[in-house]
Image 1 (cartoon, rainbow, N blue to C red):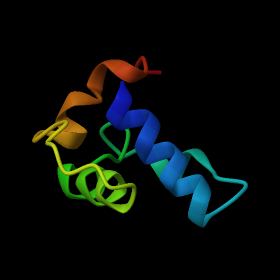
Image 2: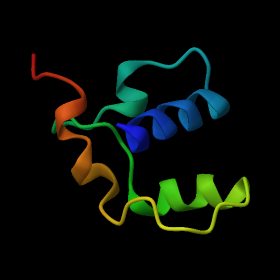
Image 3: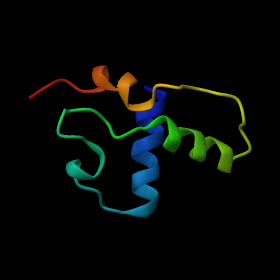
Amino acid sequence: MICAGLAVLEQMRNTFPIRESDYITDGNQVKASGTLIKSILKRYGERRTLSTEGGRTTRGTRRAQ
């Protein structure tokens, strides 16, 4: 959930208002790659690894429609 929240907030930082297609993949996951999460955390001085899986951990953040 943390990765999904960070990814959506990052998208809002660059584009607002955002559309669902800006942050949800065709596979119904939040666009949250491990590289993206690492770069967000690094910007704020956090160097520890939060997740190495990124988007693969966002499957449960939203129900399929």
